[in-house]
Length: 436
Image (tube, rainbow, N blue to C red; front, side, top):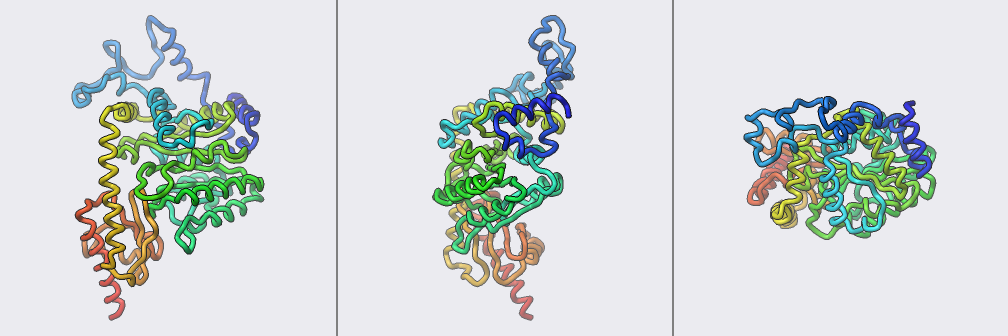
């Protein structure tokens, strides 16, 4: 093991031995080189006043070399904020501004100890970092049966972890905190679990209420008290898109510093929050009341970044930072929020109107995010998906035997009734064909 990795491990042990026990074998071995090209370049940047022949970029006229055909399109920005490498942790000002935003939108973080957000190449990259640092063969990854399929690739296929699902909803269609607790307590022999909390949920568009949120936190603390070390990951991809009564904050705030055996991790980003999917700007933030643990986890995270993507997109980070500081930012974001809320409300009004009866489907609770899911009663979801796309030109997502996910986020409000009319027509087509 590299001595620098060993030093980081000792720092984590000194700050919280349970966090050290959570690390995967890769998590223990990874480090960010303090003696190497980046550190020598940083020293040269600070002290080499005559010539700096260390950085692997081309320069011209005192700035990064660039092409006019590109800069002409981006003339509102200085070349120094576009063409050079961004720091592996992200632009320092962007990290500061995002931290301020995170605290402003999550008042429960007030007084909690947590690190500075580290920039990632969007949220999938943040989840991949968590997988690398904490997941290994046979480690349990606990998340509901209604989930984003990429979790399986990220944690199961890439890292060989065991996928443990529990039903998302109770029979009363509330969050199944008892199911979560049972899944966690089943890991007592292993002594470790990674919990994925994705709200608003993909695919159902569900966010728990305040009491449900407290029950989730209680379940995690109960398992920790029973001796299970828990990496509690808040996948906040759709954060802020809360349309009805529900949690309006990330559970990260309540989970931060709550128990020595609980390491809270927040994965979020501008991707969906600021409607810039292709920019690929996300963040990963750790909570710990140990400064040594926070510092060491940051260094290990930078080691993962250095070993995979080296650093994130500098132009994208510049664009996001500029937007977050813009005077019109909040008003423009609120305008888009109202459009999204209008679409969600329209869907619910249609489904509750009685127009489609109650024989063809029910729907899972939804109050937030991009999606909702129908639970089909009479036809197979994949058969319906195929029929809709080929007979009606309508694309949907089939999940399992009964669930059909519909993204109202990408359908104009005035077209939603036509969409559900077509889904209903497709169901009736298949029912008639089966009756023949």
